[in-house]
Image 1 (spheres, rainbow, N blue to C red):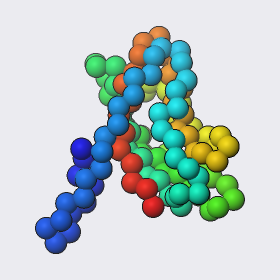
Image 2 (tube, one colour):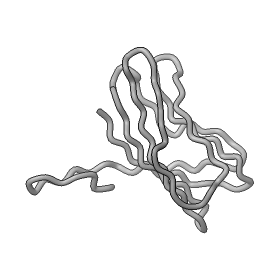
Image 3 (tube, helix red, strand yellow):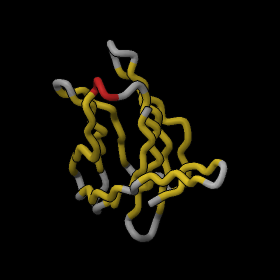
Image 4 (spheres, rainbow, N blue to C red):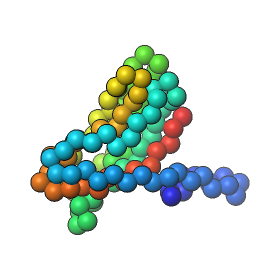
Length: 112
């Protein structure tokens, strides 16, 4: 669990999800019904147990289309691509690992 905020003695907690993405593979690490959100803020880490990269990504949903933006990236430069995908009535967060080794993806999210 990750503390995502505190106010007047109340602490908000976001669960942390973990997904192992094998070498040279594509995995949908998260999925949510498109009609259930207007914004999602992801904090993601990518690790091969030696190196670490951190991304922050925001997904915006105006009811007609989705847009995404990675607005922070820090750390090791893995050959990893993160995309927002629409599949039927679902939004999917897709990770493509172009490395020759597996990468552990951990993330928490705030959904509005």
